[in-house]
Length: 302
Image (cartoon, rainbow, N blue to C red; front, side, top):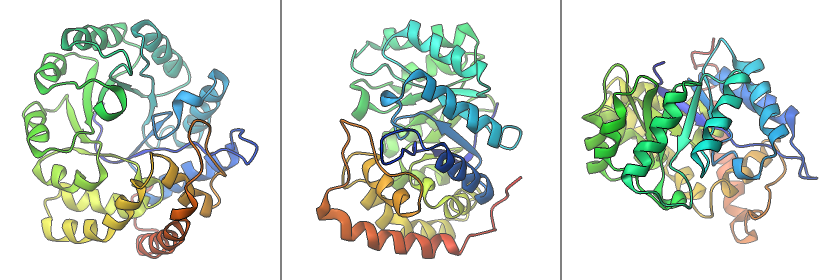
């Protein structure tokens, strides 16, 4: 498997009563496909995976495979604090039709680098799905270092890394590991263009939930080395990036999706967007409608 381009870390739509909104979910999936998104992540951190029950996880993945299977890869978030549970969740995702697993460093338990190597090798050795490593220290409390990634990158079932740290030095160290069997993906929207211009394969994006067409174009430009055009389009999206960071992800994102009719809320302990940001959310909704309107129908949907 070779992952590249615009990959969306999907939000999970809920109804006003807090139940899964599978109708909105299917519409979100269809919008991503039509805009030319090149892969999706189901039940990652943006998808509020920690709040999902097993039956809900199954329903989300099953619907995603039904809507997108054969058109673009469906990647399942399977990383948990326990190695054994991560293996079990990865097997579950494989049985439901996922094509790869996004496996975050084990949250909260703070393993050593040796522990991270053992963890990821155990998941990959099981062979249920190709594994994409995911490093996001701000959420997990541990940092998968480039030297540790290098120890893992040659494994047959480890096919890439999503790196959420945004320092240029971190990305450059990982790009030295990139080859035909190991993809390097940015996990940080504001610095993704810089990463792709430096050689990264793509982005696992939050923003592309609401501007999928613009993000497909952004990735195409950056990966083709068209720096001027990529930077110009990226500059138009920085207000959106800033808004998505005003409160914990996915709170601001879901405020925008609600205004598009794609879900009504979050699950505790996440709460609705603060009223102090409501006006900004409205302005951002108008802005992204204008930007995305320019790219409607221009994606390479299959």
